[in-house]
Length: 292
Image 1 (cartoon, rainbow, N blue to C red):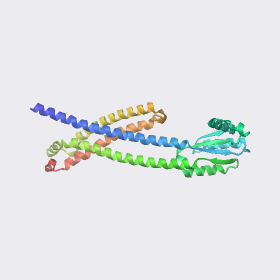
Image 2 (cartoon, helix red, strand yellow; image 1 turned 90 degrees about the vertical axis):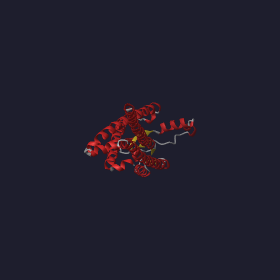
Image 3 (cartoon, rainbow, N blue to C red; image 1 turned 60 degrees about the vertical axis):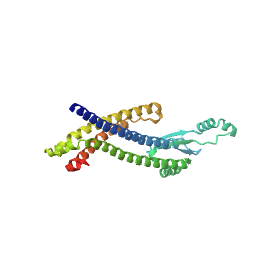
Image 4 (tube, rainbow, N blue to C red; image 1 turned 180 degrees about the horizontal axis):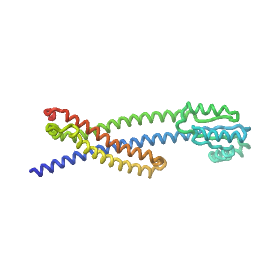
């Protein structure tokens, strides 16, 4: 009879540990995927911003040294991602390829201008900053016109702000839910041992002495759950990077490593704090309150 009861208790204990590990693993996996989404949303938004081009059209009488100096100045500027000189011959050739016919032969002359195409860094692609840069460039005597898509700049900036806001809001909500779920699982596992806790307390054991084995046990469960979550996140990373290489998920490995370390540490911290407060609750209960 005693052996049967002991086996039942062991199965119950294993089941309790399994539920805690599974809860931690699932929650940390979801948080890790959400963090990847946040990081790559910003990366894709930055790429979209950096595709916007400011075209600086030069006057016919612009001197070669002035053009070279302008290009070097742009290349050294904090806001510049790239600055490429495009001669009117190159522009005409590209335009002819786009429309499928040689418009220069049809017109008898080349109406296009020499230009410098500038792509800005993502942090500078806002309506105010782009307008300021364009106005500064327009003041140069050898610049005929500075052209860019004002509507597109405004739309991209607003869209990125909205997407970032909602993703950060979702991240905060999911983080809170994650903490509550893990805390609930750990509290349930400790609830089954509430009488053991109270018995130890009644025979004179200190609160720290009683808490220590529970904290250490749940930290180990948190580490195991975090490892399972990391394996699952690694599988997702491998699949996405193999099938969608344009996203460049592994272009910045230190960010991925920081994320994985963060997930592991978060699993330990949540397990530690949840166990501490759960045991503290039962330590502070009176004996007659343990039955409710």
